Amino acid sequence: DNQVATDRDLSINFFLSQADVGKNRATASHAAIQSLNPLVSITVHEGCAVSQPEEYWLGFDVICVTECSVELQRKIDRIVRPKGVFFGCNSFGFLAMCFVDLGDNFVWIDKSEGDTPKTVHFVPLD
Image (tube, rainbow, N blue to C red; front, top):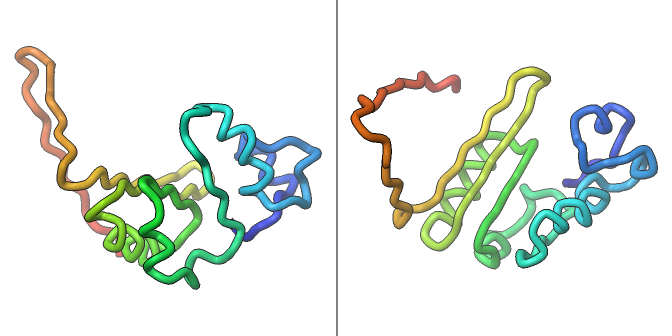
């Protein structure tokens, strides 16, 4: 995240406080996010994600990006998919989107008994 925290961010990012206004949002949120699970190492990137070479993304097991274009999210996901997990999220006021790619080796087992699986079709917006 290469943006600084504003008063508006305080209403949508519960990891920020008034003291963080004017600071980089990622850096200001780091300690609170890290405290959620001290067994996981959180790396903050303050620069522009677009300018990072492919090798940069391959250095992580899990990548979570926010406020990136769908095109950039697709690019990063294609790079890390063979070895990692990708989360891409954007919010637009009351609307939000989240894309999760847990890779080819992820297996989900439905333990519901007798429930009929539901099928949902999504129409691409782009």
